[in-house]
Length: 486
Image 1 (cartoon, rainbow, N blue to C red):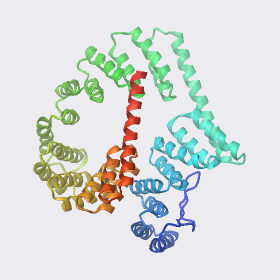
Image 2 (cartoon, rainbow, N blue to C red):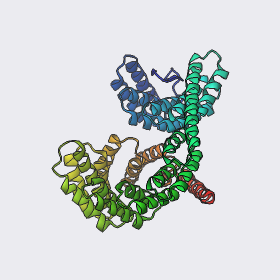
Image 3 (cartoon, rainbow, N blue to C red):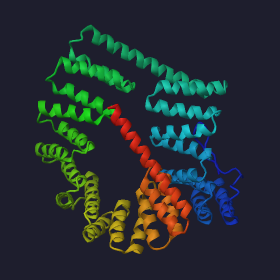
Image 4 (tube, rainbow, N blue to C red):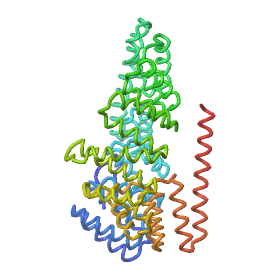
C-alpha cells in the first residue's frame, strides 16, 4: 500500500512483509493491499484490522492499518496505529516519516520534529527527510534551524531543487524578520523614554524566539513605568512564553494589585497559581474573577476545577452540578458544548470522590444527551469498574477507545479491567498500546507488569517494573536540575 504526500514520501507495503507474520495475517495483508490499490480504503482498513488480530506482533500490519486510517480521514486512529507499529519495530522508518507528515498536516509541528529526528537516526543520509525537518522548523518559526536542515539536504543531494527553493524562502523570511526588528530597535533608540515604542519590539523578539531579548526589553519597561499594570502584563506574557511559572505568577500578582478590576489578570493569576500547586491562592483568584464577571461560565468552571484539583470534592461537585442544571436545556452551539463539559467534569469528580453510584447516574444522563462522547463512556466505565461490574465496564472502555484512540489513560484502564476478568493477552495488548501512546507514563508499565505476572511471564514483568523505575528516576533528576537552574 502506498500513500501520496510528504517531502520524504509516505510509503506502504512493498512486498517485504515481516517474516514473523503468520499465513492468515499475510493473506489479510494481501487483501488489504489489493483493496487499497483500487482506492477502497474502508475494505483495506477492515482487512488490515484482521491482519492485526491474526498477528498482533506484526508491525507492518499496524503500519498499513495506519495508512488506511489516514486515507479515511481518521488522524487519531492513524497516529495510534503508527505509534504501535513503531513500538513493535523501532526501525520502521516509514512509520516515523508518515507520522511526522501527519503531525505536520494537523498543525503539531513540535511532534513532527520529534518524529523526523527519530527517522534521521535511522537514515542520516536521507536528503528528503531533511526537507521535512526544515519544513517543521519553518512552521514553528525556527528559521535558523530550518536553514541548517535545508542546507544539509543540499549537501546530500545538490540536485534537490525543493531544498534550494525552501532554503531561499526561509532565508528571505529571516532577512525580513531581521530588518523589521532592526527598524523597531532603531525606533526605541530614538526615544527610549517613550514606553509606547517597546511593545512591538517585544512581540517581534518573541516571534523570533529571542525570549531573553524580549525579557530585557520588558524589564526596561518596568523600570520606566513601575506603576503601569500594562508593563507587568507584558512581563507576565513573556514569562508565560518562557514557561517560568513562578515569575509569571508574580507578574500577574503585580497586575491585579495595580488594576484590581482586571478580570483577565485574575484569570491568568489563577492559572499560574494552580500551575504552582497553590490551590488556595488559585481559588481566591478565580473567585475574584467570578465576582467581577458573574456571568462568566469560564470563571465558574475554573472555580469548580481548582476545587477538584485540591480534592475538595464536596465543594466541587455541587459547583459542576449547578453548571449542568443551568445548561440542561441547551440545544446547539456554545451552550451545548458547555453542557457537555459540565457533564464530563461532574462525572469525573464524582468518580474521584468515590461516589460511584452518583457518577454512574451522571454518566448515564451524559450519554443520553451525547451518545457518542468517549469521555461519557469512560466515566461510566470507571464507575462500573469500581462497582465490580467489570464486563459492563469493558464495553464502555472499548467504546471510549474507539471514540478517542490516542488517549493512553483509556487503554490503560481497559487493560487493567481485562486483567481483572482474566483476559490476560488482551490486557497485555492494551497496556502496550497505552505505553506506545505515552512512553513516559509509569502507570502503563505497572499495568503491563501486573498483566505479565498474571500470565506467568515473570521476567517480562520485572523488566516492565524496571522501566517504570527508570522513568521515575529520570523525572526526579530533571526536576532537581530545574530547581537548581532556577
